[in-house]
Image 1 (spheres, rainbow, N blue to C red):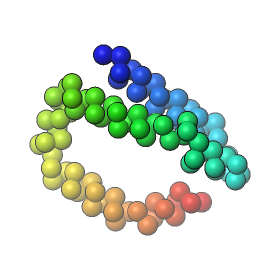
Image 2 (tube, rainbow, N blue to C red):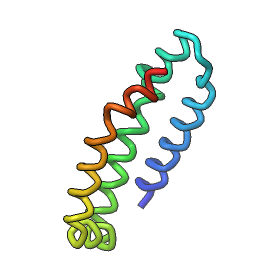
Image 3 (cartoon, rainbow, N blue to C red):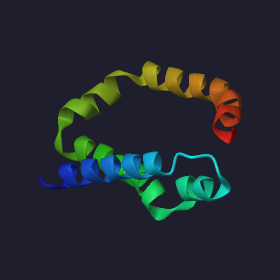
Image 4 (spheres, helix red, strand yellow):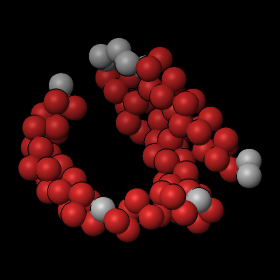
Length: 90
């Protein structure tokens, strides 16, 4: 299917767009976090995961077999969130 190539190309374009606006003034900050091209990659990652879960059972089997890993991932992310907020705000 062509969908996974579309999603991957959108993610690559988003990463390129964010890289081009990586400088540290207020205008680039607003572009990095609020522009459509900057946030559409997040939706493309969700679409890519939905595609893999629907059409390729390998990813779905990994997610079903790793329930403890998912819980651990969310726990670690929850513990790191105050530090990540400080890193991303600078």
